[in-house]
Length: 348
Ligand SMILES: [Zn+2]
Image (cartoon, rainbow, N blue to C red; front, top):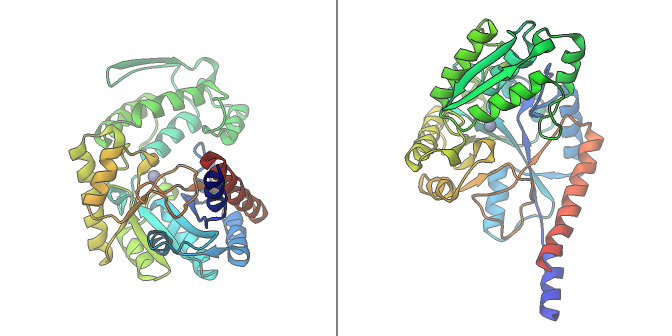
């Protein structure tokens, strides 16, 4: 009993650290997956991080953890996917406040001008002015039949609902949102060539032009190289084609990990030792393959703190929303306290 109590007390006082997860610094028309923080809010967040918190590079945080000297309440910043705005907007602000960050890059999109499939789908379904009355499409054996009824035409009311919808936390408020979510769920586990094939069919159905929007592009190779030249920043891998790794065969997973790592290492002439699983998706095989490929650690999308005994291929991260600096500060305090208590609770 006393031993258990001591264990609980020790656990609640052990140092905890936290990894933040960003995707974009931009102002978007719709943002279903809460990917974007507006530039003004991002700058406020950096000001708060600079004055109130101890921000460290993620590789340093991982090293501290593995060497048993994790610094209490240290915080690392990460960006997923490699969007162009990471370079154009986030980089100068991070430099201004001298804040380190790790960028997890989806290597297949570098320099391609292509949009990610989820952005294209979101734009097609939620922002196309006029859509056909119904959609019948067979995706991987499943027939999807969907009627849009009155929502064929995008009204101002629909547009506003789409702007406010956050798929993580709310039921779809319109038929178009429900259709988007249905298609997203069907496409997510597929390999990228099938995602693009089905997306092409949906594009033809929607009668929408196939132009990629410049604001949704990834960095060019030169921009990635320039980013990596600043010692404030680290580059990590985020696979080649952003697959749901746990849905792939072990060999397909291995290819995604090894190819993205070697592409990035060649591009930036530095070793790439950190990995972020797309959608946070991984299984025991993924973890084994990540270690085998030479990654030293990997991050998920699960919001849990890093503590001295965290599994280094499953480090949690907290999504940062489009919050003011003050709100982020409050969130950081609550995450670090609540999670510490929850942890102590579990140990008991
Ligand atoms: Zn991603």
